[in-house]
Length: 228
Image (tube, rainbow, N blue to C red; front, side, top):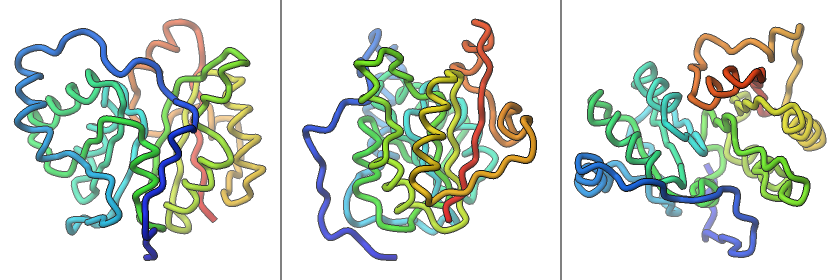
């Protein structure tokens, strides 16, 4: 695999998330962030170590970590890298790692694009962006994570034939994403029927954001784009 000789992070690119911290962490969570998190922290550097795992999956914005932890439990041969800017979400993930005794989870608190910037070409076997902030106001659309530049990085990082999974309950964001994925040209998506993107696959556990959408009367949409 080729490596990027230097990591270039554009300080002027739009921020894709809101606040980074909520209510104060509980004592146990704070202790785990101090004692456990450093040992499972993913460092976005030019030297990437697969640590002997058969595959590497990356989830950006894992929220409450339900999906991340489920995938780690069911795929012990896979290194699950999760990036999340919200401190409380990272603390929850750390607690789950401890409670379930997982050894294949690596976490990064911050902008997931910093993780992507540092990874070498073809280093990922799967990538997830599930129910991201839709930034529904037109003046905020520029903050949506799905952009031509972002998709180019996804394409660079995925091995040919591997999956980029995207989920959303906001139809405008679904249309936005499909338009940009098709324009990119580096991904295949050929559904045979509506159920292919309206029914959540068995290996795609529900997140709290999807559950909230259902309670509020919205329908989830689930996509598997294959890297050409």
